[in-house]
Length: 218
Ligand code: Z5A
Image (cartoon, rainbow, N blue to C red; front, side, top):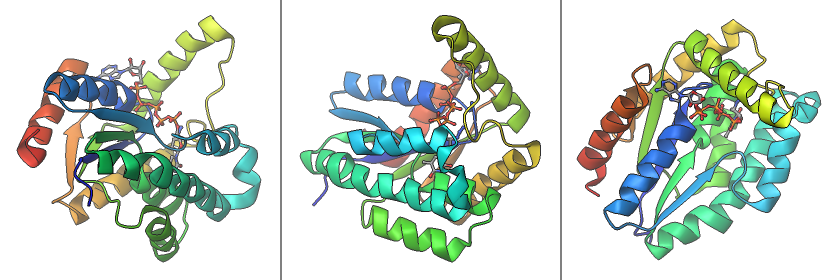
């Protein structure tokens, strides 16, 4: 039934996903597509409440499995209320993180068994799977430095300088995360394209546009 296209951006902290999601949406609009920009966790009022719980660290007490369930509960709501209806209208959906983040964060880096993550994602996602996933790859130190610089800038303007729940994890976690995303890409080459996110913003945007043109012919 769906006639729009579903693109997800994935990767570690500070890889440039939000920046590139915005640039890609602008470019797709200029060629005449309706575009819905959204993110996970979140994307709906109920999902944003779950996001607050997760990113504040309040959900840490439930353990990695409990957090995986919460990410997937938010995803289920998001897919039903926002993503699927937009695709059915013929819009293009650009989502900043999606199911691969649960595979990488709670699975590869967090230690929840892959079969459990797959089962949760199957329930939340159903047939609404991405047409294209852009995996923005860069060394964790570089991404964390960018995220930190952005947080410091934000702290100056709104007085909130906290790193979120996952930015505060140790180096080993971020290495496992990067490895997890690269493994996802290697297992699903028809859906995933790895983008070198160390380049300048404009160069990353061009590489992303090339991938979108090649895979989805916008
Ligand atoms: N999470 C999970 O564990 N399980 C799940 O299933 C899901 C999510 C869905 C969401 O946090 C957290 O939830 C996330 C994973 C977890 N972990 N954390 N932390 P979020 O939405 O608040 O943040 P994020 O998704 O991790 O993204 P980010 O760290 O905020 O960064 P980003 O979106 O990839 O990057 P950005 O904001 O576009 O750029 C960061 C800074 O770098 C900014 O100042 C830019 O101007 C700059 N930038 C961007 N591109 C460049 C280039 N190319 N060169 C130089 N500087 C750049």
